Amino acid sequence: GESVGLHLPTLSVQEGDNSIINCAYSNSASDYFIWYKQESGKGPQFIIDIRSNMDKRQGQRVTVLLNKTVKHLSLQIAATQPGDSAVYFCAENIGYGGSQGNLIFGKGTKLSVKP
Amino acid sequence: NAGVTQTPKFRVLKTGQSMTLLCAQDMNHEYMYWYRQDPGMGLRLIHYSVGEGTTAKGEVPDGYNVSRLKKQNFLLGLESAAPSQTSVYFCASSWAGATDTQYFGPGTRLTVL
View 1 (cartoon, rainbow over the protein chains, first blue to last red):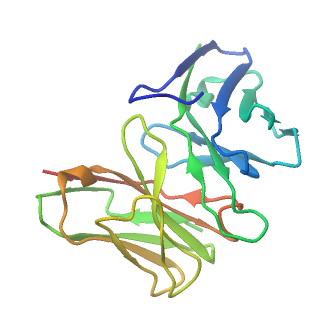
View 2 (spheres, rainbow over the protein chains, first blue to last red):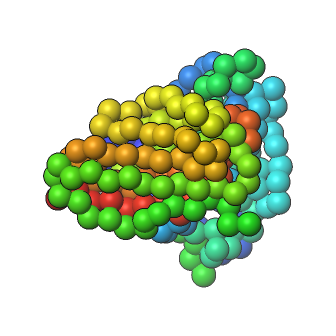
């Protein structure tokens, strides 16, 4: 989930297990949410997104859950693989529906997959 | 199709020097963005552009200027670099604004001594 200070939260999982990465977002008016994956030395890469009129969205091996009541977002990765090791960022946007808005990124969670 | 490219990949500056970071995209995207990423932090938006010839301030614009003279290029300038601008800079582009997928470049690591 979100970190305070300079130390990223770390999640360590065994290869083949499911991973759940959590994110608390800040603005109740946010209506669009995205998860990005960032491998070491690379730019962020889009994983999956969800709009506020949905509670759940599934992709290939990934599921995003949105709980607007408690302003919580989670990313579930099924059958985690070593290639999933990276820092995962959630981002929120309140601009949908007319105004541009901008993405506000969380501080990230580092996922380590043990073989 | 190279996507989003950034030059240079690395740069070391002395305090007070100036430089320009170049971002180029070949996806015909309207929107382009410059972010900075500091250790243990998420990305913070510096400036963005909603089309050729337009620019706008983001969350942390002070000390930076930008230009979008061509649709495919977005330049980030530092007129007088400061140690606080030591960071990794990422450029991104998208079709339709912040509610559309942003495609990121590989980043530029800048150190200001």
